[in-house]
Amino acid sequence: MNYAQTGSQTLELTSQWSVTSNNFFSFVASGLPSFISSPSPFGLVALGVILLMLTPYVRVLVSVVYFAKTDDVRYLGITLVVLAIITLSLLYL
Amino acid sequence: MIGLIEVLLLAVFAGFVGSLTGLGGAAIITPVLVYFDIPIKVAIAASMVAIIATSSGSASSYVKERLSNVRAAFFLEIFTAIGAITGAIVTGLISPTPLYFFFAGTLITSLVAIRLRKPKAPGAEVHQDRLASWLRLEGSYYDKPTKKEVTYKLNRPAEAAPGMFVAGLAAGMLGIGGGAFKVSVHETILGMPSKVSTATSNFIIGMTALAGASVYFSSGLLYLDLAAPLAIGTTLGAMAGARVLPNLKDERVRSLFLLVLVVVIIEMLYKGVASL
View 1 (cartoon, each protein chain N blue to C red):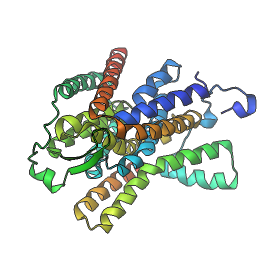
View 2 (cartoon, each protein chain N blue to C red):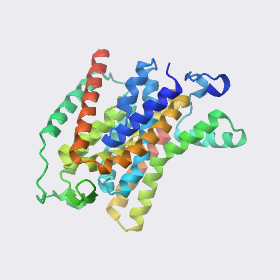
View 3 (tube, helix red, strand yellow):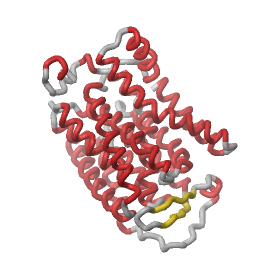
View 4 (cartoon, chains in turn purple, cyan):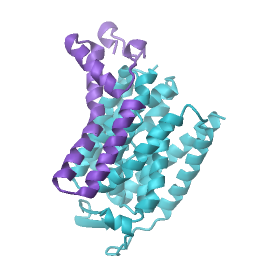
């Protein structure tokens, strides 16, 4: 990504591109406001990766709503268990 | 070190093969990145983002085509997610060496089992056990190449559960092999048709990867300049693969899966020997 500055296409893997955060949600919580207040190349890429990583999470959320709406109690329970496991892992792992 | 263009090309290929086989593509991405002198843990962290991209790039069209069995996916995901978390926790505590051989051995067994598995005669009735019918593990889809509506019933979910836990363990500990394990369990225990197996695995792997992902946010191993082009490439590759899969015959899908499975087994053995 230093292509824009130097024209080099080699990925340098320098620390400016590495993510250091306590967990996913704190990465989201700290990443979003700082990007909005001061847009940066890292912030833009981080925003994209955050949105991508949220898609499986949204998939579980939508399924919970779907099974709730169709009164499918068994699968409402199952999807809620999956939601709980993934949420806990993102918060505490 | 690897360049941007090479990463993009690699990712498109991995996303395409990943979405057709249900393997997520990490088994292709990780060794290539390591070949280009990227540290293995950095490669695994970036692959995890690529797995989520492969899953998201193909899941929506597989659900639309009714190829993913969403009910089976969520039931199995309970065990896979717990496995992924367990794997991520114990990965620093115990040596992975025996695991590589354990996984290689198990995958060789499932390779043989899938090869020997005979396609069921059309109309053959599956007698579901009580848990399977309670979970309503069945489905149907329109098979484009044969122009037929295929209905199927799945069986033995209780036996699949420990297999899925092990699949999650592989994903969380080794970074590869989770998808290979899942598809093997789908086919040999549950009795899924190959396309349903691939599509359901693609639905699951994104959630599993996310469950094991938090570790990488605190470790500093996730480099976004590597992860971002991988994500873009695998998404595009997976979207293309998702358009191809419904038109393929089940036997083709299975052959492709077995081919990639051989690659995964060789990788496992190689890594196992290298870590001795």
